[in-house]
Image (cartoon, rainbow, N blue to C red; front, top):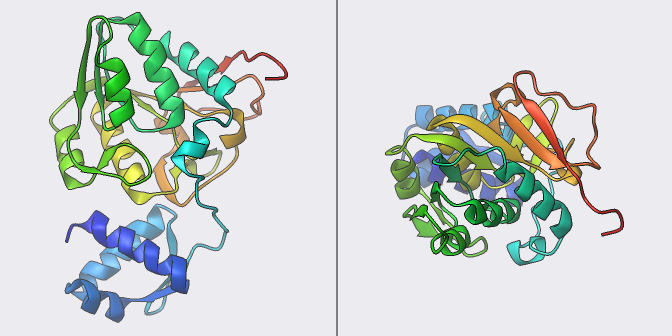
Length: 256
């Protein structure tokens, strides 16, 4: 069993029991206590849990799960479209772009496909379908296991395929963007894909509508100083700063 699979099962268990024990996990995964302790340390560093004597407990703050992907398609659709259109202007022709799965990144990919002359690498089945037929777009869908909710691939195969490429940009849409915790996701497998895309890219562009600014979720993706560009809408809190990056505000029509 791969580490990311153990981490996912630990989070699942914490969701039910609120506490896990090192010895219990070692038996369940058939690994050493030291391996479990290393897993718990990594997960604590990402903000997923809090280690205690003999195991770990769920993080103190209550983190609500994301709504279903089908529900997210229609929420803040005007803001996502504006963000996607503005973000596409940041990508020069001929660039190679990693794009992770999400409703905001779908809006971005739609705008990017209209520009053409791009190489798009994505784990999103929907993005691959809409960008594939576009003019002068060379589109690659990463292999892996399809998810039951989000139409995308995840897992060890997806992560290993990401490592085969070097991109100019990783364009990502996290669940939350917080001044202290940075960019976060609710699901571990989604955060792992985002982090892998960042590692294999020269620059990172985060897409977050204004309701995500100031919020946080379970699993860390990156710190604020690792983000090159943040694209949000004009209703976002202007107090947020990127230590090494630039923030772009997309105009949305009032009342939509």
